[in-house]
Picture 1 (cartoon, rainbow, N blue to C red):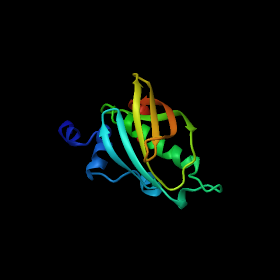
Picture 2: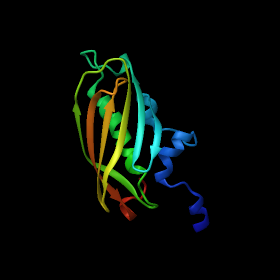
Picture 3: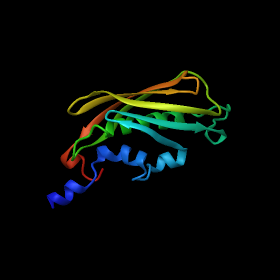
Picture 4: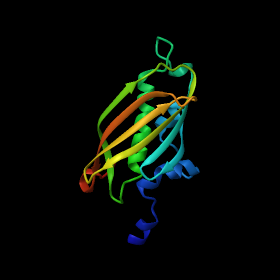
Length: 152
């Protein structure tokens, strides 16, 4: 049984597996239309091309869409640091919207700022094609183990 478990992919490998095409992206990525373009431990970069389907009534990208993209980048960055038997959950999420966006190619870079035993902090910058900051987000994450992690 231990030998079988050692062959199972670790949750921390998930972002890299998606990048290599060895795993399907999460459903929210397919729904919104973003994709992982770079992965290293504690850092994940996501690309996203916005269009009219992402617009709010004012004709700009809805803040919730930008929040989803940032949350995914930060979450996958945090996932990349997890040890076997660990999962995580988000405790708090904050985002600052710095400029309106319409149709654009955006890049969201999530990075783990601090990974403690139980609580960690991740940040994400979303930039446009000119490398101009569109939004900045932060997330407080809690690492789960044992019974807390079961089924997650």
